Length: 343
Image (cartoon, rainbow, N blue to C red; front, side, top):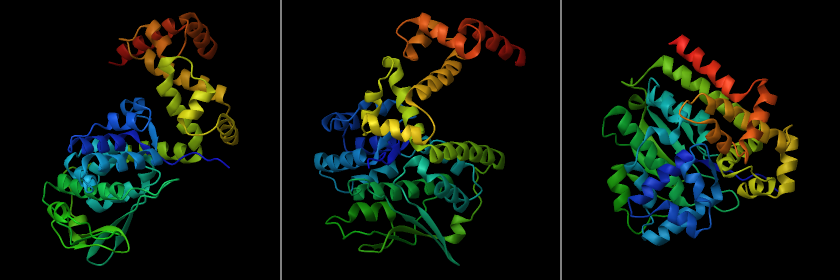
């Protein structure tokens, strides 16, 4: 039976792109060389298959000649790469609490990621794994996660944190220098797992960026997003593809299925299992996006119709009146009036 591919968030792929650029590589060029859709690189809500990213890592190593290229992730730190998960981490009271949130919400970053936190009397071990989908995961992907996590710790504390030990479930590379330069601690290769062993006192120290109110707000956003993602994963993924394709015209079922690496019949069956048809999801997505776009006064009604994939604006006007009982222009006037009164 065909199944949906495990995916990686566009935010994490953006981080990978910045890391590859350190070695002079253009991730868009790598995507094109591999026959992958480059549109996902500019869509913050997109998801990219894990196998596609595995192929990108392999090609990046081949083109750069740098098998330690994953460690570049420590040099491109941006909280937005984790989306709401990153902001949730930033507002946590301690690194331990923050990485607890990363463990809880990690599927939003990548469905193949598997991070664990083990607490001992004096230490805290962050353990990392990236599971392959149809292809074995590239070792650079898990080393990238380790490098990014350490860089985040150093950035959050404004301190040059040094782990007690870094372990790698791989043989020792020919050139260990990049690993020594980044981790600055004893390195153990051929270990049972990839991990960073940290001081528990350091992990539980208060953070200057702590904000309980923001942390609760981010938890709610991340929790809601995760609940939708886990309960209806194919519906969620299909909606993201539709959002990306709609500005090009009404997406065909076959085009969407191809973008998700499955057959049209499989897509139809998987959506039915989650209680929705392709046409229902298309209409629901258009309806939700229409409300978002109409709240942006700089967009004309014609532009909104095009962004929703309507070839003729009159079709958009009729659809909107069917959905909400009034024309889009009248709806916009009411929304903008309400906004001005609230101000």
